[in-house]
Structures are given as C-alpha cells and as structure tokens.
Length: 388
Image (tube, rainbow, N blue to C red; front, top):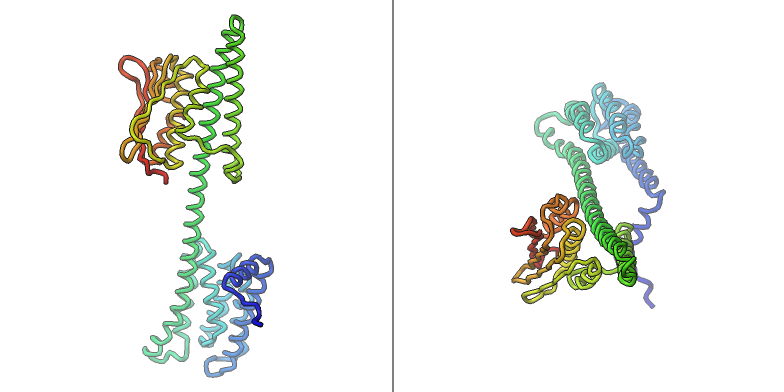
C-alpha cells in the first residue's frame, strides 16, 4: 500500500507555518552564521590565498560574521563592523580570497540596501562600499595583471547586485505600502460619503416630517400621528443603512446589513418623502439595462441628495425625477419648483460635492443650477459600464 503523498500545497502551508513561528528568524540567522564561519575557516586553511597570518585574517572577518543576526535592525552598524576591520587588515597584510568573508559581505550589503534609509545608504556607498571594493582588488595578491583583475570583477559584481537587490525590494515594498494607504484612504472617503448621505438624508426628512406634524397636531391629530409614524419609519431605515455602512467600516460581511439601495428602491424613497407635503413624480424612458452596483447606488444617492436639498432649502411644492436610459449611459434629472436662489441649495454643501465626486469617479458628468422661470435642477449622466 502506498504511503501518504506530500503535495505542493502541503509544502506551502508548512513553509507558512514555519515563517509564523517566532523562533524561525533566530534559527535562520544561526544557520547563516554557522555557514559563514565554516566557509571562512575552510578558506583560511588555504595558506596560498591568505596573505599574512591566518589567525589575524580570521580575526578581521570574525566581527562581520558574528554581527549578522543584527543586520535588519542596525544595517549600517553591522556593515561598519564588517568593513572596517577587513579594510585595515587588507591595507596592512593584503586581501585574501575567502568564502566566509565574501558571504558575510554580500549579506550585509543586501541588508543595507533592504533596510537602510536612502541618505545613510548614499553615505555608506561613498565612505565604505566603494573603498571596500577598490582596496580589496588593489591589495589582492592574485591580481598580478589586468587579466587577473578582470577575472576578479564578477565577485565584486555579486556584492553590487546584492546591494541593488535589497534596494529594489525596499522600493517595491514602499510602493505597496503607499498603494495600500491610498486604497485605504479612498475607502475611508467613500464610507464617509456614505455615512453623510445616510445621516443627512434621514435627519433632514425626519425634521421636515416632525415640523409638519407639529403644525397640524392641534387641528388634525390623525395626520400628525401619520407623520410621526413616517418619522419612525425613516429613522429605522436610516439606522439599518447606518449599521450596514459601519459594518463595512469594521469589515463585517455585507450580509450583516441591508443590501445596497439602487433605482429599484426609488418607490420606497418617494413614499418616505410623501408625508412632507412635497409631491414627487418619477418618470422613466428608454429600455432599462442591468446596471453595475456602483452605478445603481450612485444614481440612487443623487436622487436622495437632490430631494433632501429640495426639502430642506427650496420650499418647493413639487419635484420631478426623470430617468432616461440610452445606449451606453443613464441620464438622470431631478428638478423642483422651489426657490433656486437659496445659497445652501446652490452650493449644496458636502451633498452636491459628494454627488460630483461620486459621479466623477464613475466617469460621469454632473450639471447643477437654477432653472429659468424658477426652480433648481440636478442632472447627471453616467456610463452604464462604469464601476463594473
């Protein structure tokens, strides 16, 4: 009977578990130091490649190898500890060809490029890295002619490549962090706009309905009671949407809240506003197509914000919502017969700014302004494929 097989997925999972182990870094550093010490000791046994006393050359390279575990936290210090004793030894005795020394220098050069900031990297290049390469080739006894020097240059190129590789990985990581921060900021802005839309609309409608109830409570208690019931309904609906938006902010599942509203929810919006005294007419022309969630939500928010501004600032009696489905786009227009001269409605505060940002992100166009003869208009046009 065949034994259990190990798949590539199992190997990947095992590696992931190993990397999550807090002691893995220390084990890896200990193995690296051991390999560098072994390579250095073997190199010192070859007396032909070690000018001067072998023990003195080994003593010069030892600090750089032993300091390797601290290369991430203090790359410049470890590089200095590794470079200075070797430089002094090379100037006095000559530069040996030693695998342990080469390994430690390559690792430290990578660490400086990977974990050190740009200014310190530049200083180390000028003060230590360049002199290190030049003095090593100058004091290497095997470089007796130009041909031997050219043969040695690939070993120096390994150190340069390690430095550049570390710097490249650092830049890529910084780019990923910056991109993630930008995405997070955009998401926070979007959620803040959602919260503003929810709270401003809900409170605005409830204030208008409550004021209407207060005016008729003495002469028509039934009508006042109906208005207050609509206040409660609007408050409950706003709370549901608010919980959904906060759930997105916390990272909860979308199923924990209400679904995103869209144009199919306009009847509910119109019904909620019906008790305020504002008559709202909705007209739709053209063949409706399935909209992406982003476009559907954006159009709903435009209607919601425009009607809320009408209630709060325009003193209008009627409002009209016109939806026109054309090839490749949806055109939406909200007009009223109120006082278009209201500064709040004309500027729109965060509301109209939010509409412009939301529609602009979808590649659409927004027009707002007073209507000749009285009233105010909010008109948008959005490509139907935006946001998909």
